Amino acid sequence: MPADSSEAASRLIAILRDLEQRGGARAEALRRADAPQVTCHGLLFRLADYRLLTPVDQLQGVWPLSRALTTVPGTARWLLGVASNRGELLPLFDLRGLLLADYEGLQRRGMALILPGAERPFGVVVDAVIGLRRTTWQAPPPLPPDLPPDLAALITGISNCDDGAVHVVDLGAVERLPAFLAGGLGSAGLWPAPAAAPAVPA
Image (cartoon, rainbow, N blue to C red; front, side, top):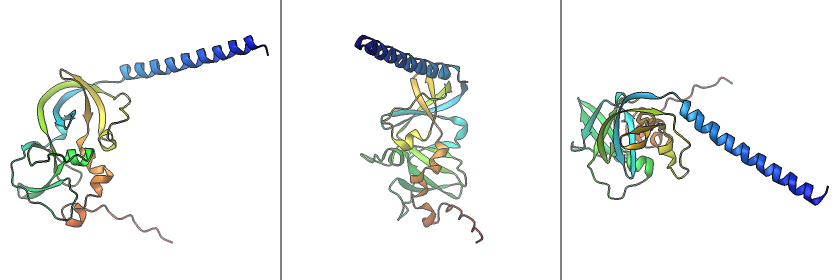
């Protein structure tokens, strides 16, 4: 094959690949634009440098972290302790420590967001509650590669509110994270241990 024909073929292949990549990016943008939007109330809060939004209907309440806490020996560092809630023990978790492994300057202050839980209520402590937002959200775009994996696992959408674009998180999914399940609460008698798998007959 003549050299000029070979070069022309190479240029054509490069052009086709470029068009294919552009088409894929455009299709992804159109898919996100066509994704159905959800409108509801969310609670905007801060966790380290992240601003996050969680649906209000997933929460049972919000506490200032001023209640007396009892520490639990032998549990993960991000279990701050337990507090009394209507006569029941309510575990309170440091969400920053659990998701970001960030304990710098950790103090017992902030706000506890109370969740119903699969078996019993629990609270996750965040740095600050910014306020309620009525907003819409949709499926998130591809997440940044440097986002902590446990935080990325909670993200269900992205919201464009007055505060700009923020990620929507499902805080109830916290208790399904491997780190949460391995936190030692079952051995402390405060959290139901995972059910053993049924024996398979030989």
